[in-house]
Image (cartoon, rainbow, N blue to C red; front, side, top):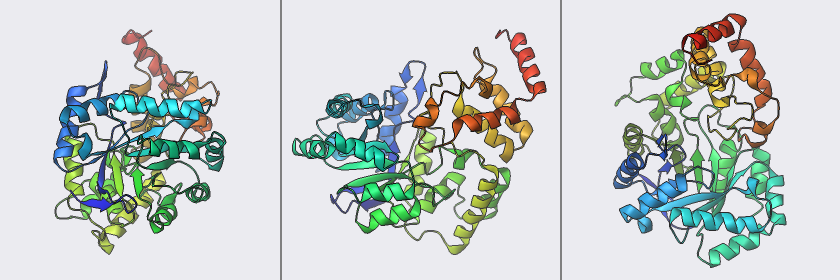
Length: 396
């Protein structure tokens, strides 16, 4: 494992961080046996940065249980996040932190983030609740050791928040599909210039840069003939690790296969690991991707559950598939993932309530996008076939 230094604390952090939002689940919640297996293996291979949040259902409890069972609390760095967006009063800030500490079965959190700040107004709301005094109080009490913020908004708002407080760490979305998206490369470099460690989320855009590339883009990677041969996921990680500014790159790992592949990548990728030829390949793939990727949804699920019963991430995934792999493939995906279930979760069930748009980290125009999904993937013949299929399978 290769480590990168947090210049503020002096901590040596594994450049691969374990994101615990997507731990394997069963009908009864997180599959603890599988979660323990992959977390234990990741730790044994050098991963020491484990990321979770109050809002990740069951994740804090699972991570805390496993870390304490393995007896490695003092050997790893745990993060969690304060869900300010659901807070209604100042006292909620203490309550959320104390609940996270209890769920994680720990007396302190190494890196604590203000979760999902989207603009400077969000920071102003926290200021009105005396959050700076709270942060100092939490640090003095030993409940947290470093404070940061995770960000989903414009570069200008990112810079305002970055410059508004003496932050210990920050968390941004960053991948090769668009280096200027949200905080982007300029925000990354601005934080690095101030020695603030930067944690990267969505390096694979919710897995889509690994598993949903257009065939033409995947062919470009294969044609590169690297030694060893690299998967699309490795190309995406290497693009980030090729740069000196990122400190930790989070991966939401849910299987041993993913953990092993990512650890191999993290053990050999360093700043400057990509040649000009490699970067040209990625640039070609980027262009192909952006031609076919119509809705920039990462599948994070913050918009769910939908009051109208729409499977929003599923609808958008099928819509993008209809451009990257053809309309027939997209309709097939849509038909199988949203229709052949007890309650169809199709785009036309959107109630236009707008609840989803208020919490979307990507600030997507979800309601209008669902209208486009309906137009492209719900033509009359498809809807008629859906009714027939549901009758045959006795769903109605």
